[in-house]
Image 1 (cartoon, helix red, strand yellow):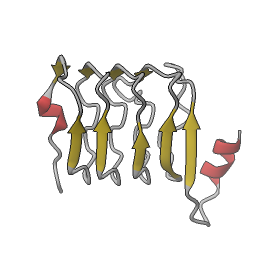
Image 2 (image 1 turned 60 degrees about the vertical axis):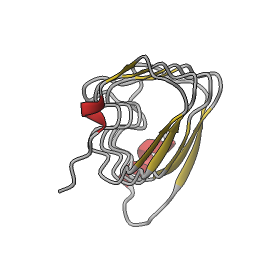
Image 3 (image 1 turned 45 degrees about the vertical axis):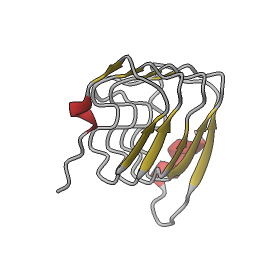
Length: 131
């Protein structure tokens, strides 16, 4: 409820830092949020969910900092799509799969550090189109 109230109020600029300890595949609470600036994902999470227009952090236009723990093994397609302020991200060595579109339309993303060999990645979807 708190996030819904914040979404409705646009007269102030607010930066929110989140600590995520569970990701539900059907939860779209954080999609299209303009106020989340930092996310730390706890070690209880092993998949960052996504899918076409179902990315868990999709279109979080103020998101600049994401901390992914070594328990995560999959970053699903669209998980961080259209996070236009995200400049860099480090993929921990436990991630074996990055699905198509995981970082699509992240127009500020210039540095992706991958700490292990990824068994499945579609590099076409890591390209960023600058308009």
